[in-house]
Image (cartoon, rainbow, N blue to C red; front, side, top):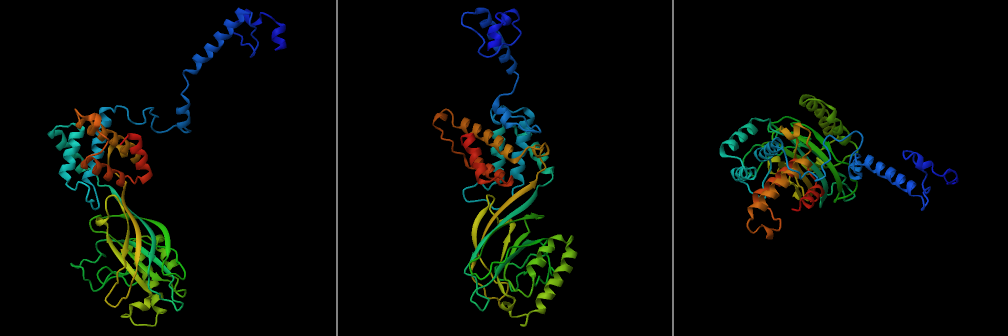
Length: 408
């Protein structure tokens, strides 16, 4: 400040030279206008910089998709509309699981609804369906959360058990095929099955052992790839752990063995070790510390997933079991042969664009009384979104955010 005041007129002689803050004196008009020109010049330079919101959203490296100020609700290009149309058709044509009572189960109704939403002619609609049918089917996976069990049988002298679960996917060759609800012998991971060999399961996973309890709580999550949605089954056994037979650690190593034959040979050694420690005959199932099993066809899993208690079943007429097991099941897709997937578009973004498209159509369909529309989706719209959200593995929180953001 002293230096500036000691050199009056220095800023006036060269307006391009920046002056120190607070150097202007009220009586000096030349310095005032020079100072203002400098401020305006700096402001013009800042106009080329991205706004703070974009700077906060962007990172290093730059995102694959540019930040859209309208949060994905901008007008799509014709190519993007066609890809979104393909994504919606793919979702309906390759759906898997059981539809709920409030959902539209008829495929033709859903496809016809999408034709109206995207405004395509009958010829264009038919060609689009044929293209999607020629695409590669998605890769499915089953997410299983083993939550807890209750009222299990006591197998130990102390009046409790040390339960753990073995679970895996049975392919069609290993799943029981006898018609009707009454089956003399069910599959077991220890005994295998007469038709499918000792280990028809593609992959076995094991929970932790819960000591001295009849109401174990696991809350463990598992992920299984599905080859055939129509025939594969989820099989789960509950056993009482025997300290003399280290089945749990042995089964964990099954995932490291490549190929079904290798797993079969490895599993035979485990079974042989387990039987060597047994004293009862093969007809006495309770001596194997068997606590119950579940067989759930993958095709029967609801498309929206389910959180349900299942009643434990015996594996033969000689078994005596009781209790229930709580599972959370969700059938998803991990690979999709669509344009949006091939371009790296996430399921979250695809769902957001599809939701926006459906909301716009639903709003227009309410005209001329669209002002009273409260955002309720029709049955076909809700069904298509449910299918896409489940196949894209979107959580309940993600879906809630998307619907809140879209105003639906």
